[in-house]
Every structure is written in C-alpha cells, then in structure tokens.
Length: 403
Ligand SMILES: Nc1ncnc2c1ncn2[C@@H]1O[C@H](COP(=O)(O)OP(=O)(O)OP(=O)(O)O)[C@@H](O)[C@H]1O
Ligand SMILES: CC(=O)N[C@H]1[C@@H]2OC[C@@H](O2)[C@@H](O)[C@@H]1O[C@H](C)C(=O)O
Picture 1 (cartoon, helix red, strand yellow):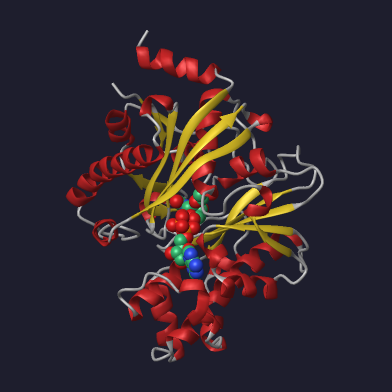
Picture 2: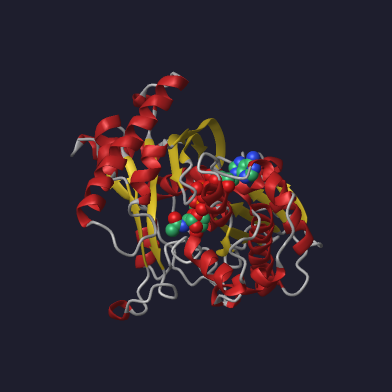
C-alpha cells in the first residue's frame, strides 16, 4: 500500500486530529491559518483552536491576484502561473507559521486548503448562453504544492463536490456551523461579515439538520474596501467604521443600489464581487448623479446596503420581524458602523460575536475548512438543509499526497 495512504488511514482512525485550516477570502487581506485540534467527528466534534494567524498579503500579492480576480476576461497564461505560484506562496506561509509556533510539520495530520477564490459563477449570475443552468466556482493555489512543500497530506478544492452534487459551491459554512455551534436551547443566526456577507441558520433543536441552511446575503465589506481604496490608495479599509459613522445615507443612491434582483431572489443563493464590484456602485452613482458624493456619505450608504442585504435575507427566511440570536464573525464584526446598521435593520434580534460561543470571529472560516477535512477523512457525509438547500450529503475535498 502507498505509505501516504496508509498514513491517511491511520489519521482517519485517530481519536483526534491536528488540522491546519486555511481561508483566503474575497477581501484579499491575507491567508487565515488556523491550527485546530479536532476531537471526534460529526455531531460529537469538539474543537480546540491551538493557534491562529492572518498572514497578510503584500501589495504585490494583491496586485497579482487582482489581475484575474472577478474578471470575465484574463490571460490564460497568467491564470495558469498564478495557480502554481499561489500554491507555493500558501505553502511558504504555513511553513513560516509553523516555525513561529514551534510546531514541526510532522506533528500536523492534515492541511485543509480553501484556496483563493478568483471567480464565482452561479447560474443566476453568469450570462453565458452556452452554460445555462451551470454553476461553477474557481479557487487557485494548487494543493499539490502545499503537500509537497510541507510534507503534510492536504485536502483542497472543497467547493467542487458541492457543485457536483447540485449546489452553487457556497456557502459551505452550514456544515461546520451545524457541527460546532448548534444549540438545543437557542435558535441561532451565524452571520459572517467578510467581503461578501452570509449567514447560517441553526434551528433550536440542534439535532435537526434538515432545517439548517446557509446563504449569502449580498455585499459585506467588499464595496466599502473598494470605496476607501479609490479615495485613499494607502488605506485598505475604513478602520473602526469611523468614516462611515461621520457620513449620511444618500437614499436615492441606496434605492438605486437595491434595485438589483439579487436581494429579492429566493434563498439560498450565492454571489461575489463579480456582481457586487466597483462597476455596480459606479453605475448606480452615475444614474443618481452622485459621482461627487463625499467618501463619508458613500460609506454610510454602502454600510446601510450591506445591513439591508442581511435583513432582507432574514425577512425572506423568517418573516417580517426576525427575532434570533445573531453571532457575527469575519472582519465586518469589527466595524461598529456596520454592526449598528444591522441592529437598526433587525431590531428584534440580539447581537454578539462568535467569541460568546468560544470561536474567535476572525478564525471561524479557516476553522470551518478544518472541520470539512475532518469530516472527509473520519466522518459520515452530513446532510444539511435537506428541506431548503436540497444538496445531498457529500464529503468534500480532494486529496493531495506529499510524495
Ligand atoms: N477594525 C475594523 N474596522 C472596520 N472594518 C474592519 C476592521 N477589521 C477588519 N475589517 C474589515 O474586514 C475585512 C476583512 O474581512 P475578512 O477577513 O472576514 O474577509 P474575507 O475572509 O476575505 O471575506 P469572505 O468571507 O468574503 O471570504 C477588511 O477588509 C475590512 O473591510
Ligand atoms: C465562492 C466563495 O469563495 N464564496 C465565499 C465568499 O465569502 C463569503 C461568501 O462569499 C461565502 O459564500 C463563501 O465563503 C464561506 C467561507 C462559505 O462558503 O461559507
């Protein structure tokens, strides 16, 4: 038997596994690296987060990713090279983290690599007549590079199985949220405020996986970051939402931004910067004569838009006055202007961060991919949201062996 496969069988039979979860999302702020110890699997899964770091992307990394990011037309040569280069870059970032944490690669069982999303094309969003009804999504950073450079068995490309089984490839958060954060006593909304915002609904009877589901809700931080960068090339985001808090919502512009059909579309649904990008804001500003709007007012308007997207999705799912315990994660949970807008839009909900549930808000998405890898090797495929999501139980992730 191939020795690496024998090692994988051993890993699958251990009581606990040390798995590095990786996530690099739409904000292009860096690679989130979560060293997790996962005990058990399925509904008995227990997590210990041993280490966490966000290794920042340099401006040069961002420049290279942006050459293809959310663009309909790119150089195929550039894309090919970027796939290999990002794999090598992510491997180097992991090796640096392991060195800083004084953990040997041999002590790690698995890497769970999400890869860098560069294009997301659910059927409702792309306009390709040759591919009507086809969902597709693309993450770069080939995992063979991670496996070979680190000598750690690596699982990657989790979204493709979800697509193959009839889903849009996202959000996958429902699987890990359900296993780690369901409660028998509380109905929960796990709200992730990344570049794109999404939430997972966990019904009160924690064991009822058929009613759990996750959906994207629209923009999170992506439009805010782009607006800040356009005005201040050296600033990457509105730190603590101070600029947005100093602005006024421009209601004509907000109404125009809300006119896209995504907000009314039934749940679950996914989206990305392919729709919610600078061109969408620019077109709405053009139509409403707000090209000269102050940055503060633009940010206040975009903050309101993100919050209304979340509230609208919650109303579609739970009726006119949702009253749920909301636990926020992702970078937007650090933005008081965004959190205040959410509270205004959903006055009957209570708001906290996932810290209250013992999960660091910045680490949550990287942890979720470690959970998916844990399930792929040791668990049984979990069926989530059979009622709403109609995605069959599948295990996700492709396996790269180090040699
Ligand atoms: N102190 C802060 N004040 C305001 N905004 C913040 C703060 N800290 C982080 N952010 C926002 O969070 C963003 C990073 O969020 P996060 O790392 O969750 O995104 P991501 O993982 O790339 O997104 P996605 O979930 O869409 O993949 C930053 O670009 C910024 O907009
Ligand atoms: C295609 C893709 O990478 N989507 C991300 C993105 O970032 C947030 C939102 O859009 C979500 O749908 C998803 O990530 C999380 C981790 C998910 O799959 O649950």
